[in-house]
Image (cartoon, rainbow, N blue to C red; front, side, top):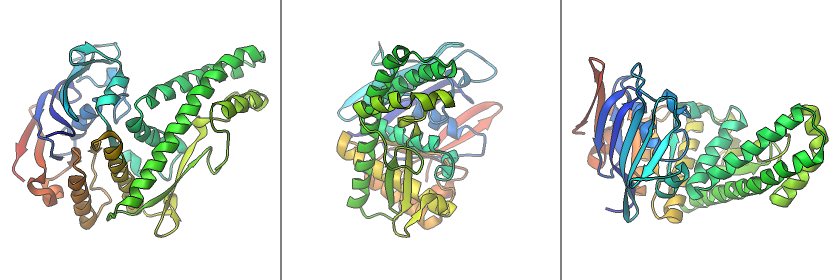
Amino acid sequence: MTGLYLKSLTLSHFRSHRRAELTLDGRPVAIFGANGAGKTNILEAVSLMSPGRGLRGAAAEDMGRKPEGVGWKLSGVLQSLHQVHEVVTWAEPGASRQVTIDDKAAAQVALGRIARMTWLVPVMDRLWIEGADGRRKFLDRLAMSFEPNHAQAVLTYEKAMRERNRLLKDQQRDAHWYAALEAQMAKAGGDIQANRARTVALIIGAQMQAETAFPAAELQLLHAEGAADGPEGEEALADAFAESRPRDLMAGRTLVGPHRADLAAVYAEKGMPAKECSTGEQKALLVSLILAHGRALSQDFGAPPMLLLDEVSAHLDADRRAALYDEIVALGAQAFMTGTGPELFTELGDRAMHIHVSEDAGQSRIEEVDP
């Protein structure tokens, strides 16, 4: 079997799991158990097979099993198209996260070239009604799947902007101090804008090409909240940063650039902004985007991404839940899904692996069960 999926995963001293092993076969994985049993911890471990801080956005030092304080380690065997890779990532106490791929030290961005994934977690249920920052991070995670170097562009931009903001707060007025930083921000910012625009275009195309039980979203990439127009591309951004210095000095921060961008969505059938939709409709729109992203990436990369869907059944009725499972199976994605009970995954049957997670005398237990 080719495609993109984890064949095995071993957790050592990670979160609640002293040691846990999963042997997988590429089918979706339904993980159920009581609250606090460690289901989301497994999804977080899978998410660390990609660049970044994982689905919780946690620091490496916070991922170790308490109170042991010995660090943590994750080992995975990854099928990536026609190749198989051994991925190991770990962090020792007080140290940053390390990665090896096939026994060779690697930068985290290298993970993005062999493993593409995206996720939905309960906190994202409020994506459409809270601040633009969460929507930018959501879009950047999708963009990273299409262009792994997007992560580096974001880091470069944010680092240069922090240094520029420090100059602004200190009321530095020498143009030479700003020029080099603004050049870095303009180059990285132009790449960020291009990657985001391509991602939105691909997702829109994937939505139009497929019939689905989930509502389509009309997407628009904004330069700032409510602003469809703004500087775009390296040259325009460089000019905008220079022109904005007087205003930025008064504010003590950078007021223009990709860090102000937003993603607007409208429930297409109803013509209603996502932020005004019901909770269930907002969740359905999110699921729709994740599925469209999977279809688009399957065409672009050659395989759908791995999907991490934490408590995915929340706010989905039984019909939509069954439709989601049908679409995941049709997509061919290895989706890791969590829920409190096996009844939430009945519609999947033997199309998925069913794994029960429990805790016994302070030790986690992971066992595959019949559907």
